[in-house]
Length: 202
Image (cartoon, rainbow, N blue to C red):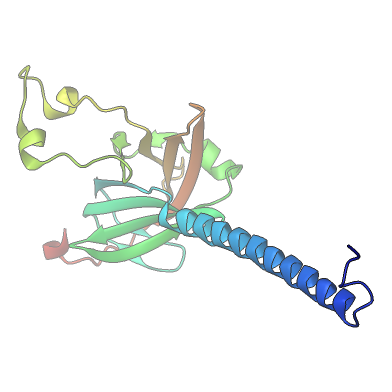
């Protein structure tokens, strides 16, 4: 039997419109799925934050940052965190930020020449590691000191060195990456000679 659609006006046009509509639907479907996966990946990347490193340190001398912020000697909460293309060293007290110090170039010759220790090595805790409870921190199974008792794989340390002329203090942050290679970041502060800090803030 001959095809009755042949020769009917508009049959080819209707077939073309249907094919074009189907193609447009498939294209939009493909684009929609791609956009969904892209948004999902972006959401995952924003929720996965880069860890920072925290600890505390008692400064034995008065310091001043490059932008003129004075840090009197005493106990501070410290945090080293990546920001943009460099690192930031944050000094805090009682939950309030006192100073933010940007890192200096790794090849700074002054940092390489500083070799007089100011305080001992301070190990920093990564914010990606779980924080022990007060009971877990106080318990001891062997009678050793808490530092020796802790079974922790420290991945970051902060050391401080004074320049030979005694005018500059460098905070040297070292962190171990996934490939077990150590990254070194330096921060520079100046010794504050004119001590005007009140005794109650020490």
